Image (cartoon, rainbow, N blue to C red):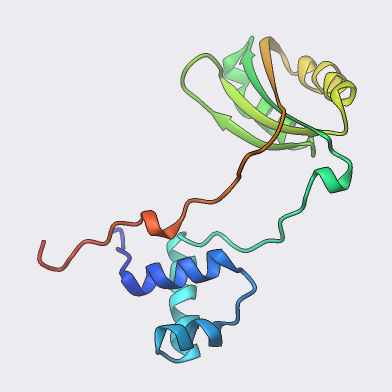
Length: 160
């Protein structure tokens, strides 16, 4: 049975998604509860799978990766999907891999130091995986990037 979220959960999620380094005691003060209550609620949200973890966000450009690209892949042998995904996962410059509907079997997000490095990655690491077709879109600039906001969560009232 799927557990539902309430306004208290929503407030906690908003605060910790705005600042993953916020102290639970600060969240507790804002919610007028004890630090232990926040800790227990965060632990429950983690067990539910709502919270998948916390991480530092690295800036690829500051690390020398000037090219961001999205690559759609079509597999020659779709039955080799799992082994292809495993091989793709081993390429550190590929940061996202989506199984999609539409024109592609897989859709990737890739960081490369420059366009030449992207070309080499596609030819030397992706093409040998048994692709029938690729299409590459290079991002000129990221206007924004964000996680889904807890403000999107619809809380069901107990009257329903």
